[in-house]
Figure 1: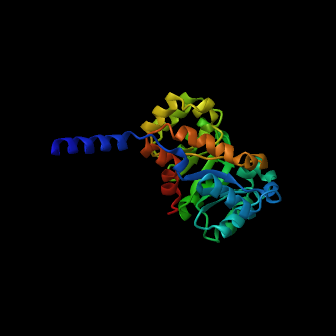
Figure 2: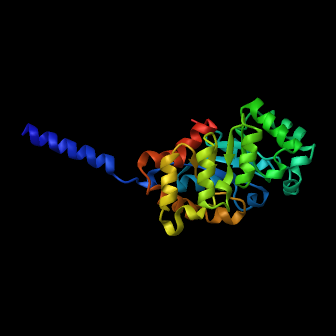
Figure 3: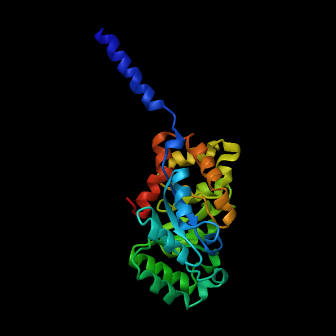
Length: 273
């Protein structure tokens, strides 16, 4: 009888170890949220937070153009919103910010609030990586303990890493248009780089996790985060569908890896409890 009881305990333990992830139960830390001016009339802050609640998004990295949208969400839920400051006062700054000296005092003034976790998300090319305002933002990031959130290609992110190795970098969209082989190469040779996966639909085309991506996640489980990128208001309209798609492929990973990519990596990187 003792021998049978021990066997049953062993079987139960093994069953627990191999139980698949219930992705719907995973809290999510969405690492790529914008709450910019075009969204404000369609989605009030309370509506955004209700949408987070409905879809299981417990925390979010938020930036906006202008920055007031980020502040509105943070004021409503400071324990859930990780504010990140963009160097864009308006969308017109997007193409000129790396050489516009007036950006620096703007960023310095906003940072006095003491609430920001990072600077970005900003767009730039490898050729702009050494521009004067990029240098200033890198210095501010180090001085204030902020990460920098870059939307660029593989050449751009590696140039930023080369020029500013003391900065904590988050790579938006895993380079977006970069193929898997390039992303894997960048991840393998840059061990401090964190990578965010919004809009990277090829990770799980038709809901099935690509085996190459799965192997990359297993190789670097502490390096990836998920995100939505609400860059236009229609992304808020699709928010629930996007979160369902994320959970579908997260559920195809081992539980510990799924938890890291869903929320633990972002928690640790950003510093929210």
